[in-house]
Amino acid sequence: MSKLTVDQNQAQISYKKHRAYIFLLKIWAIATLTFGVVLNVKNVIPSISRGEIIFENQSLKLMFLLLLMSVVIISLWEFLHSRYSPIEKWKLEKLLRGFTEESDLLRQHDNSFNQTKSIKWLYSISDSLIIIKLMTGGHVNSEMEKDIARRLHGYFVKETRVSWVLEDRRIKDRLIMMVFSHEADKRLVIEDILSLRQSNELNIQLTQRLSWTIRQPMGLVVGPTGSGKTSLLKVLIISFLANNHKNKVFTIDGKEAFLSVAMSRIGKVATDGQSALELTAELCQIMQQRYEEMNADVDSEKDSTHAELFEQGSILLIADELLALVGEMQASDKMLKPTERIYPQFYSNLMSLIVKGRQASISVVVSGQQMPASILPTETRDSLGLRIALGRMSQQQAQEIFGLGLKDLPRADTSNYGGLIWLDGLDWELPKPFQSPYYDDEKLPFKATLSNIAEAQGGGLPQA
Image 1 (cartoon, one colour):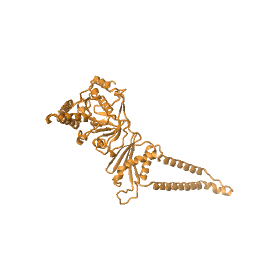
Image 2 (tube, helix red, strand yellow):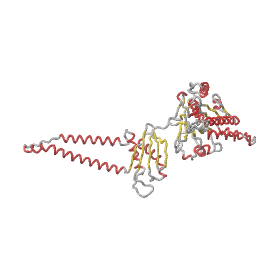
Image 3 (cartoon, rainbow, N blue to C red):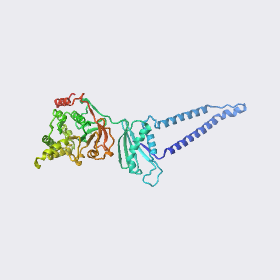
Image 4 (cartoon, rainbow, N blue to C red):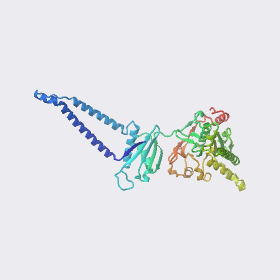
């Protein structure tokens, strides 16, 4: 991280530069006169008696050449440290100085809480990201701290007229950290199964920069009809199966639609309350068996997942259109005795998988057009480290999915299968705008690809 301390305003800096340049010019003038006199004493005095003055101007030429070189060097230095600099680091430093001035962060120090006489910036620049930290030292009030990132972003755009994207911002212990880039995160195009990432653990690329990993094994995908939810589920399923040829997918389809028909080629599918209960019960039994295998050696110090220890692959449960399935279960349960009702048993199994499945290498993705708190309460939702909302959201949905008001969420382009994403464990303060991967059905037909995977399981990665 490079450091920049700003303790003077632009007028003070300009005045000091002006004084320094005048001082250097005076030194040059005195040196030029001195050298001229010293070098010409031996020529000028004898030449007076002959009625002519012989003046050696070689020193004068050298001093003017030195002056010219100094002007060029200083001009080049000023240019390289200006906002037009081709060097990103120096250009950024100039911008930070300008923002400090324009935002009035630097003021004459007094005893007021929101006054300070120095501002400290830390910054680093890589090929894709620019990380900037502002150390306020407790002198900038909290309301202003919250607005710094937005104002700095606007200042960058105004002064440079190039694309700036505010990727992230965090405020902690009087330190504001902001992450910028010059290009927004790019959407993935899924058109070849062989190009998908492979690993022993869950590691699925969602965008050019974001991945769904073992850190967030439980997921929630919400979106209205036409928002791209089914296409995203296709990406997750195909990527999960390509991730490791030993991986398996179980499917619950509450509407008994396209997904259930397709997924029957690769694994077990449930489309009603009873079959969903049986499927989740089977997964809970597998989870219990895996925990027994992991704990068989009571003296083992390894704290690893089942996939890491035994290389048997991971399991993914896709519970699509869960709200529709729950509605059906609750309607049929009204005709049954309390001890025979399906939904409480199914709910208990599903919650157990979400809360305890990670260590057993079992992941769960719940999806639907809506996901009210009655289906996934807050304590369960907190276990869903991956949350994606596609399309437009209501105030209630914003609270249910992200626990925030609609006005507190960043704006996202929802016109082209976009929305918001939250990935736990990355120290994000807010969800991020998200462009759902594009699944190319023409180049990678979903049902045909699943059939190929089913035929190739146990024999390496399938051919597309």
